[in-house]
Amino acid sequence: MTAWDSTGLVPYNDSYIAGFVAEMYNIELKAGFESGKNKMWPVIENTINRDIGGDHQRITRHQSNYSNVKFKHALLPIWISVVPYKEKMYYFLVNGQTGKVQGQQPYSAIKIILAVLLALLIIFGIYWATQAGN
Image (cartoon, rainbow, N blue to C red; front, top):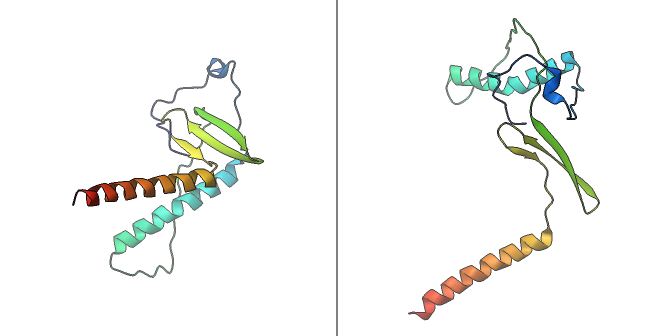
């Protein structure tokens, strides 16, 4: 999911979610930290390669140290929805802070084919119009 601006976080108050459905995390803290480290590794590896420079690097060993690791619960504005379409469920998330949408979407083969045919028809029409003037 897209990132949130966490600079304006304030202490939790029950009134923030009064009347709304809120979901607790479903990944344990240790597993979440391991998942985070796995997501950080490509960035760390890229930084190592960039620092070494050149066209090819051979990294035989690396060590990442994590210090002062903390976590806090945070209420994040996110809308989760599912849309059934042709016997399949399509899930999507909306970041309530940025408005960015992430998820799946159904594709209609007929609509794609019609769009391609329309584009080809327009291209042919433009070509024919420019050739008719010659």
